[in-house]
Length: 120
Length: 108
Image 1 (cartoon, rainbow over the protein chains, first blue to last red):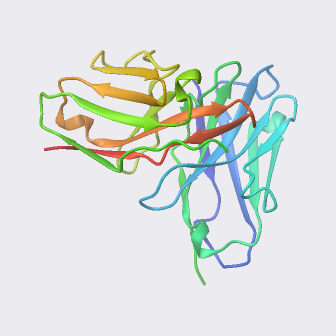
Image 2 (image 1 turned 60 degrees about the horizontal axis):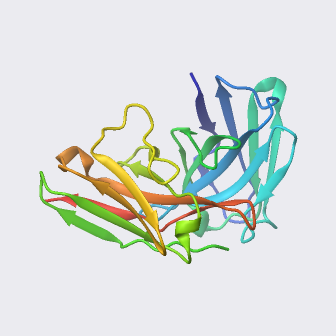
């Protein structure tokens, strides 16, 4: 059974760096084809993909956020970490991590999400 | 990057059929997936590869994709189907996932 869970601060101040951790079970990020992505959703708005990391450490970033976002993995801990610099109130959103298994071209399992508010 | 357009809202009476569209340039040549998202919950995959249903998703949910429009059809709509629905695909040119803007389905 695949599960993912996001963790991190619920409140960050403008200009600070956000660090979120996705802890998962039921699969390994050392298995060929496996990837974990981050997707966010501002309140009342649509889903927005942020970043994705694969089993071979290949990384993909949304072009609009590439300069601010970094994704890393710790295979031994079954964790994926997202860092986002220079946070702004417009970055207030629920942040989700999700599983992908290539060649499937969709996210099949999602975490419950974590709401991050950016405010002074 | 690739852009997909969804109507902001669709309303339907219980027992009727709801059709939610997702428009994009030659989207029929791509594989489209659909998520259902209820308030306060994570998205749930309801259709993948245009027409396939994951296990546990009722047969009332179906999908189609041709030309410039993909669609999610929900037959015999129930109150519990009220949710936001998002189309999704993997842009092959950039190898990036893309989501539509979402459609709020209201059951009257």
